[in-house]
Structures are given as C-alpha cells and as structure tokens.
Length: 226
Image (cartoon, rainbow, N blue to C red; front, side, top):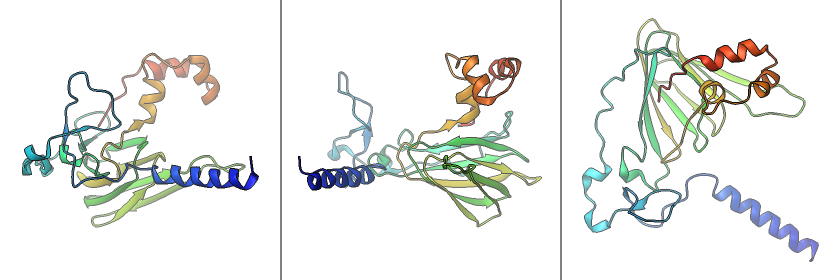
C-alpha cells in the first residue's frame, strides 16, 4: 500500500476523531428525549419523541432559583439540568448545573469525562482550580484562582478540578457544560468507594502508603454531592 495513501488515511482518521470529540451536531431542529421504547436497541443518547407531539414544556425546566441542601459532609450540592431533567437538551450538546456551597463547603476533585465546564459565580467567593494531565518529565500543573461575584472560570474537558467556598457565607455558582450528559467522576469516591473495592495491593503501591491507610479510606462513607 502506498505510503502517501497511508498518511492520508491517518490524517483523515485524526480529523474524524477530533470532529466527534464532543456531542455530535444534531441533524434536525430538535430531538426531545423519551424513555427507551420496549425492546429497543441501545443507542448512544436518547430516542426522539415524535415531533408532532413535542410542546414548549419539553424545553422548559424550573427550580434553579431554589437553593440545594448543603447539610452534608462536603457542605455542597450540585443541582443538574441535563438531558435527564430537561428532555429537550437531547442532541444539543449542552447542559447546566447550579452549585450551592455552605460556608467553607467543598465541591471535591472530580472530572467530567464528556464535557468542558465554564463556571460563573453569582454570590460569595470560591477558590477553584484544575490539574493538567500527565506531561513527560514534568509535574502535573495546577491552575488556580479565587473567584468573586461576576467572575468566570473554565475547566477543560476531562481534567481534574475542584471548587471550595472560602467565604463565611453561602456561595452560589452556575456552570454550563458542553454535553447533554457530561458525567462526573469524583476521584476519592471512585478510588476508595468503588464496588467491588479496588485491590488493597494496587492502592498501597499506587499511593505509596501503608495498607492500614488504605483499609481506613476504603471503610469510609464517601458522600456524593451530585
């Protein structure tokens, strides 16, 4: 096979992978999600409601003016508006969350495997940051900033990030995400609270700590604020 042809195929494959890196563009005005029909094949997304049956309520959600309950060990709660709550978001590649923080509350280190997040602080003050992926012969870089009302910060897709309320009062933030279903992986929960548990031998070597430390961490209840 001709080398130039192979290079062309490789370039086309790379271009194709970049094009589908986020939720695909819709091929119609809308595709309001419905629960999967009985015996339907699995699809990467949601089935569409008959367009003739669609109405304005399919594109409407209310309640984000109401604060979430932050009386938990983290002192924060995320109220999502993704395709599960707002069916009209299906195929549109966007979603929204409200995040409430008690004084000094934390939205712990986590990632969104399918979305970039842009965060806007409505009231209060947040210490935010994200960490870069592995770089050869370098340490993972931390980018951090203190945000106040009106400030905006972006967390690139897939990177570990966090927010902590540094105010003595409640803080409120809203965030847009570049997926109808961005997903979330809370690092501590995933590593120490998985079911079944990750092997203690794996974690002791990975974190270079004594087995008793891993046993203790795996015995804790890991709170999910999402």
